[in-house]
View (cartoon, rainbow, N blue to C red):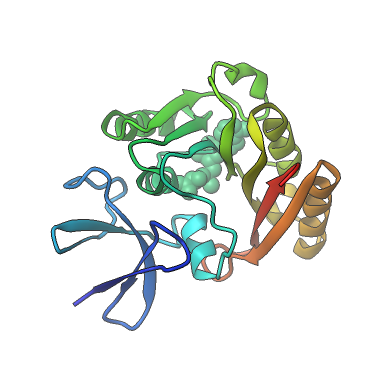
Length: 231
Ligand SMILES: C[S@@+](CC[C@H](N)C(=O)[O-])C[C@H]1O[C@@H](n2cnc3c(N)ncnc32)[C@H](O)[C@@H]1O
């Protein structure tokens, strides 16, 4: 039997205790009776929980690796760069609830088709076919957001984050970026690349509050959490 417990420090996050002894993050399903990526659903006391796969979602992996700076709460607005078919974005959608919004930027038409299906069911997810390197192309977003999340596996990841933050992130808002060393430079030592990306954020007005290795869930990746501008 799988047991579910609440995370006392991160509202909206639950822990599924698997029969194997392992634990996995989980979120309350905003749209009961539906799944997004064939994830396991657990029902307890008339609530549905979606088990959040750390091998498919870097935010889940970061939680398992002890992410402290967890800012997702109900009603917040999130700009999500590199939403793909909506795996992680759908858990964010659970966390911010029906009063929040996730603007999902994705540039690959093939995955966008799946993302649009997910957004049709989850009304707090808004799909936008656009390139995150050109934030001026989605100025239609009608607000500054509380959280900027980036998982695009591109060179210049920190630079893309900074460009988007300047346009869309509230001062004091939180940014998360998953940095994949091999997308930036296959030859360089990962730790060097990570230091360089972190430095770019610091030089651009961010305070980096967390740096987490995502091994063994995603090799050669780190997950940075940073606060933008004034706290
Ligand atoms: C690692 S996958 C994202 C997985 C997703 N974040 C999740 O956890 O469910 C990276 C995604 O970023 C998209 N991507 C890469 N560069 C992009 C860009 N410049 N603008 C928009 N999307 C981009 C890719 O098409 C791909 O779907």
